[in-house]
Length: 405
Image (cartoon, rainbow, N blue to C red; front, side):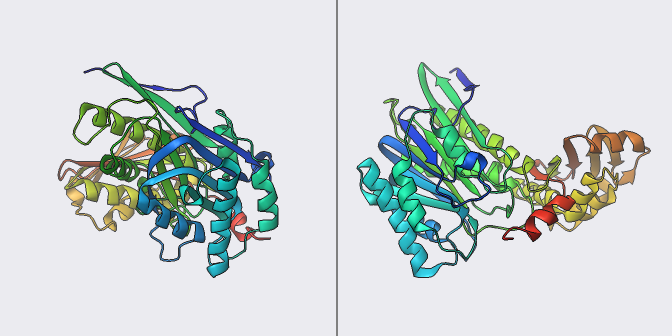
């Protein structure tokens, strides 16, 4: 069996066959990139669809609506806006989310029950439905409209996150594409931010659900920007099956290839979400190896990547390695100091719990880079995991102290 996964140049969510998208300016998000703040995604044929949502007990209206509709395991379209989260808006917010779906369905010519809704932005404010009603009519769907959709999702993000890959296996070929947004209020649990994924593969529903959860666990669930979990988080995967090949089922060679490709797409998007954290100047990658279990490796890596003191030290290029040790020590996982190894970049700092003589200037130079890697080996087992975060800058405080003003 030969598997080949290749990135699609300028790939996006509409790279898989049969998906169309478009976006427009509704005047909801005053800081919208290219003035796009409302977008629509549509599949030519019904999709098997599944999603993971925020575990925050306060759930935005679009989350409530989309969770309910996805119980049928299918979808044809999605409408998304930025600038207003439509969260903490009560029955009025639910009515607005439903109306967005109805307007989208009417414009395309499908059932409202087949339309999902997502929103992102300020919490506690009602959607400007008068503007939205007009804007939805203006959206023009096209095969390359994924790039517009990716921009329409952004809030404090500084750039769009989008990618796509093709998978070739045993003479068959399919594609997976995706877009994501996220810059602040990012600390996922089961799902995170907004991410929409598409594929033209034929995928059996049970495997589709399993594949999405596994991909999210190694990607979006391993990033953190500020320790806050949003009310609007949603990761959606739609499979329209237009390749017409045999259905991908759990345990098959095709399933392994699909999982590998989906993981690749999600990790790519997750890394760029972390890199584009509010006020961020650096991406932090934390790898923990030698943990008793994978779950403990993930917990330790996430704790270090989330530590405000570690993030601040990286921002200032301060070689304060003790902050990393303190973070892993409080992570709740099994740690034996006398067995712990620590590397910053490729420079060994601690071996078997003992500080090594290292070039301070060399470490400072590494910390000044745009990407900083921290590697820990607990030497207690075979569990490995990688987490991503960003540095903590003065700009983060500025952005979040003026978000509504």
